[in-house]
Amino acid sequence: MLKRLRFIAPALTLGLLITACAEGGDGAPAGPAATGAAPAADLQTLLATADPEKGKVLFLQCRACHSLESGGANKVGPNLHGFLGRKAGLAPGFSYSEAVTQSGIVWSAEALDHWLERPSDFLPGNRMVFVGIRKPEDRANLIAYLKRETGAQ
Image 1 (tube, helix red, strand yellow):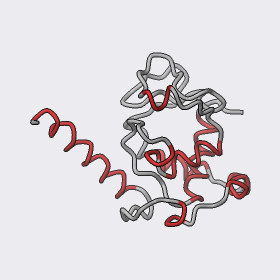
Image 2: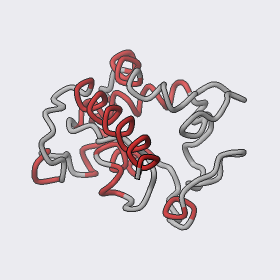
Image 3: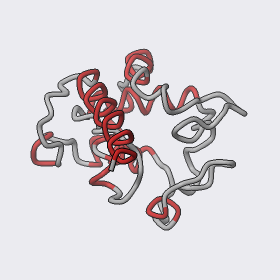
Image 4: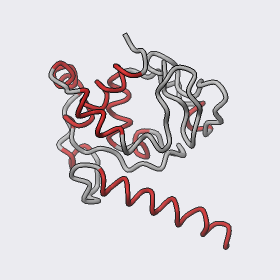
């Protein structure tokens, strides 16, 4: 029981910190109805006007767990360099949950947008401790930054 509490308390603290850091992170449910999430067709429009510099600020909540540079270390989460266009669960040297390795997801801007909205809803059973980003514009800004920084074409 004590071992479990040692894991849960930091995870909850991290979750609360991420929620507090995310713009509009008021803890409200983040499903499509609650978020006013943009339909997939609108993602391309949002990406066309996305600001990678705003995405860089949003990435501050991700950098504790992910690195972006080529050859960068895996942390609590995998290094993200080159992940767009790659099947989920294939970053070298990272131990993924079965949910991720069995998902068949190929990382695209659309898949990433849904993942970033609320990872636990997008892929139940994954181990990522992140509540998500509610605003479609924020997700587009983060995706634009990730594209720029991870070698995506």
